[in-house]
Image 1 (spheres, one colour):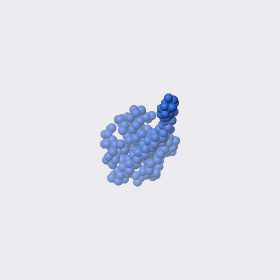
Image 2 (image 1 turned 90 degrees about the vertical axis):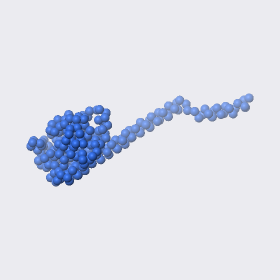
Image 3 (image 1 turned 45 degrees about the horizontal axis):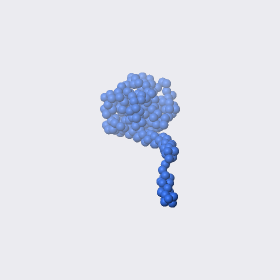
Image 4 (image 1 turned 30 degrees about the vertical axis):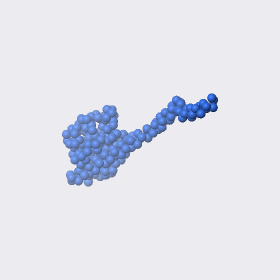
Amino acid sequence: MENKNLPHQNKATRETNWAFTLIELLVVVAIIAILASLLLPALSKARESGRTAVCVSNLRQIGIASATYSLDFAGHLPSFRNWLYTKAGDLTSGRLFPYLSSKPVYLCPTDKIELASKRRPQAPPPSGFGSSVGRRDYSYAMNCGICHATDLSSFLEPTRTLVYMEANLATNDYSGQVGPTIQVRSMALRHGNRGHAILADNHIVKMDKKEYERNAQLKRFWFPTDDTRGPGGMQMGNSLK
């Protein structure tokens, strides 16, 4: 009898050896969790790198569109007053839109996520000359320091003068402006604690907080010529180096 049952016992033993115990399953789950914790930051970083590349591309397209605009207007850039809009809250009414014909180009993908999360950026409310309030759907602001000299041929050092930058804007800021005195906005540091700007020679720079603050103290960063007056002859560059 024992010999007859032996094959069945061996078969049962073999089947039992293929089964996982609860401890083994828990170990597998723990390993998967550890691997996921290691991979998710890398995947998140990769996604942010992709968004950063799109942001740089957006800014470059805005710079090229502005240069193309200047070819149609005797070398002049669009005004900081109307490059974004002529009808408040509608960027398709802006002077630059016909040269872009794309609303998504105005908005950084990372900024889009922040706006969708309904978190308010740490930014001053719209105030000062030319301010406008509206639901923000753009990320880049134009330097209002070039108000008196939009002719690119008059720029003394185009490699140092700001035209557009990623600005730290409130969710209801529809001014489209950044400047040294009246339209004060800091750079938005959305991409690894860095932000982007495009200068008058159409090259893009990436700055951290210290680099931006150092440049923001320089006259040439804001003003293309030695004339540092603002609208109505207001002196705007006295505190700059």
